[in-house]
Image (tube, rainbow, N blue to C red; front, side):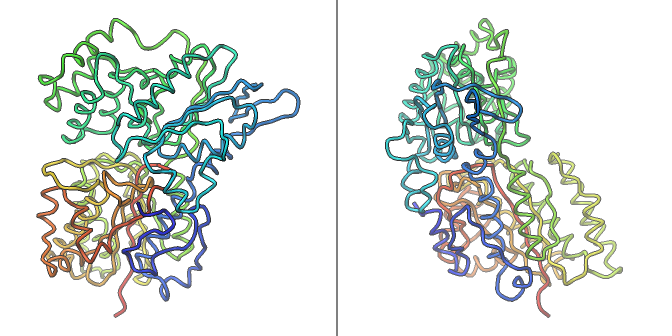
Length: 540
């Protein structure tokens, strides 16, 4: 595993920023055109975005232990009395760093804790020199690593069982602090008997392979789980439950993040059946799954009183994007955050990005190119309407683009989580597939009327997962450009062939010795994906 701090060994050494994630260097804007490539800028923006959503700083901003008078834990507008009655559980890709910060804050008030974290994360963080994300020797928190390649396994199941046992042993005098981040679903697998872990995972894999959205996946996971969909909160009753949540879901719905273990499910059996029917899975359900679904309506999940639970979102994709925007503006870019909720199938999202890039390149064209601009703008707005991306409003930004001079560089930022329609058996992830699709769309655009304007600009596209892991690969994502398809063909690599097999990782690993892969190692956080488009005029 490549460490988070010895990142990007296959990218030119100038791209490596020799700094810890939380210590983002500042670059003066006048240095931009002389000493840094667009790819270096993109890497810097990605690191900046990740750095601001590292778990420890966020936890310290959200939680304060006040010791004057009666000791109490203060979170926003709520105070929780503590008197050596505090227990901690957690699950997710960012939870180890959250747990380390929490134990430092709580001191002797913490009695015991259990966290379920990704396989190999301690070694990765230690190798990266990120000791602040590791628990101290003699910690009261037990760490169980599992869910290798982000897939539930026996170790994650063991962690879920131990977390459930701890919660079930609490009393009305206790406080349970629950730390939740993205990746929590895979790290808290507790299928409702008689469902086997393998049966539950087969269903969720089939749903994912057929293009199900994360919301649909989580609805099914909750229906088949002991701990998701409010199950952990039910197990901990009558203890008070305080959940601190790092969001990796569009819109930050607390019932969907890690499948909502501390939020009571409002989804009916009918909704589950509709999802399974939509993806042609209803007729192939195992008998155990049928039995659990049919019996769940007779056992309502929501209790009469939910007052013992307090859920707080302490970090999200929007926070990361705002930091990236600030850094891009310091570098001299005209910068726009498109949306923190980019979603949809990657091939359509790639077309959207291609049209946006074409329109930016056309924005400095003369009045004679008005009809071409209008055509590209119309295609763009049609795609945006089809995708229905929350928060994406293009009318005013497109007007603002018209006022930019040709010397002004442009940075477009977005976040969210796309989906991939699997049709092959290759290796990759949604970020690498999106980067490769964008390269293909830009290559095709060069053969159109807009092509001559594209060629007048340098363009770099970057898509990366803030957790450092894109699908079951070692990469966080990838860079691409309008030249990539042509350059790959010179190496005997056909981009369309790799895409048809969903084999984006293999492509990027082979192409130019992996130079375009974004390799960070596990970052210790997770707020979905970050995309950056960097555009500047070429020297003529």
